[in-house]
Amino acid sequence: MTPDRPCDHTMTRREAVAVIALSWAAGALRALPLTPPAMTIACFIRYQIDPYQLDAFRSYAAVWGRVIPRCGGHLIGYFMPHEGTNDVAWGLIAFDSLAAYEQYRARIRDDQEGRANFQFAQEKQFILREERNFVSVVDGTFEIPATR
Image (cartoon, rainbow, N blue to C red; front, top):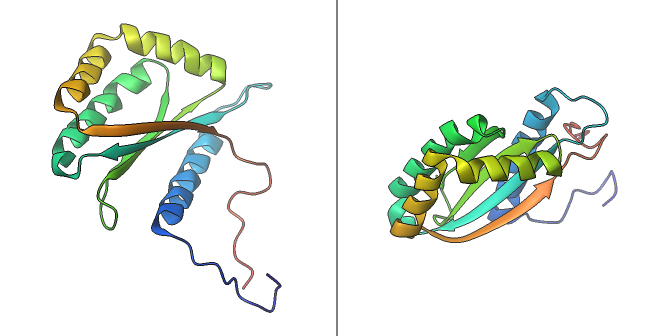
């Protein structure tokens, strides 16, 4: 791509949703208080869900809204299908480091409400697949406005 030619790549819906979610995550990460040499990361969770059980997933996400902060995660948000693909949802949680994430995972396993929420998901089987990726903002690449 050159400055005088427009980009000829058409973004898929999945790519567009990922870009939007990562942008939100990056904004939330930048707002976290950092103490050097802490590395701020986000756990980017992609769920494939049963589109006939959206209310069950909504209830599941609402519980995490209470449990995640209590267990040490900075909840950026859960995102449900709205338009387009009806079986993909996202969860974004920020941490100061992978070590902080591991401590959070231990606390969440001991949390009574968290355990009940995991059990709820297993019983209802509305989560068909779950992927976790850890991302961080590349310095100098966030919120750069278009020049055209």
